[in-house]
Image (cartoon, rainbow, N blue to C red):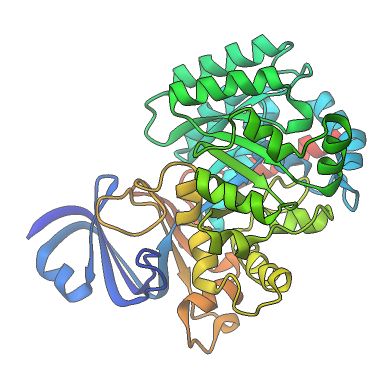
Amino acid sequence: MQAIDLLIEARWVVPVQPHGVVLEHHAVAVDGDRILALLPIADAHAHYAPRERVVLDEHALIPGLVNAHAHNPMTLMRGLADDLPLMRWLQEHIWPAEAKAIGPEFVRDGIELAVAEMLRGGTTCCNENYFFPDVQAATYRRLGFRAMVGLPIIEFPSAWAATRDEYFDRGLAVHDEFRGEPLLGTSFAPHAPYTVSDESFERIRVLSDQLDVPVHLHLHETAYEVDEAKRERGARPFARMQALGIVNDHLIAVHMTQLTDAEIAACADAGVAVVHCPESNLKLASGFCPAEKLRRAGVKVAIGTDGCASNNDLDMFGEMRTAALLAKAVAENASALDAASALRAATLGGALALGWGERIGSIEAGKQADLAAVRLDDIETQPLYNVVSQLVYATGRQQVSDAWIAGVRKLRDRVLADMDLGEIREKARRWRERLAG
């Protein structure tokens, strides 16, 4: 009998890899931060002596969800400026509010609120894109939450940096400070083609190659963005990114609602990852990402919520459902982005987009133990015919009972292990008073 830290026994295990598989009455053996084995419960009892045993009689155990595009400090702006088109929303409301509030405390408190929400919804990893990445990284590290932290690059001054050189210098200092942290990574996060110069993109390309870090970029978010680029530069933003060498296997392209078949093929050939943010795109009327075309072309497809100022939640179960339904309407094909593919996009797809596919995203021996347990005996998910379909089309995030990150239990029977919800609510109330004043 091998002594191990943890044995999780579940009614169903959905490992995601192999694709579409559901295993009944299986257990996941965990020691330290890693998965040792996935095997039938009876075999687990014969081989392992766990220090902790968790029995999930009516649950599906899935990989922790990966929110592949988020602006988590903006959780404090939830509902601040709704029902507006993108550029008016940004220029008249979000950027002025940020100018009034943004700073280390705003970033810290917003991330605390976001992490609490994400864990209670089964999300164990996010791809972050905001200012003050030093505060972001320190906060995620303190909370034990897995995150890819974006190093912002934009051409206008902010509370984080005043000049182009300062954005690069301060971002690289953050990369150096947090390099080697087990739950953290960094990416370059140029805001968008219309706010970042060719010179900055050229520097980003060189540094991305040298440091082997991703480039996290809003791209082809709206038809307006594409039309303005054609008018001002005579080329679509994607073509400009190609010419600048940005279109490669380091690129995490977010939104991508305006794509030609040739651009889809180019993404597949170059190894680009595309993050689909269906609810934010719907709410801002930004357009429709051709998720099924991308998937069929072999492009890595992930799912993100975007920020709470434009969504207005961090609910990856809702995002999976919307992604699957929207893909069918866009493709005019009821089989498009089936349930298993939607779940894969929200887990392993996100991990692959971040370059962490060997680390997380599926329940496989050797991977880190990022896991979420979902109760399926609630009245809302009865009767149960197909576990994966039920997870995508019927399950609500309130049915998530437990979550682990690198083998550490972060949510126990809906209770956060090491976060004070009362304190988080009070901080959110104080920020509402400040931002609304």
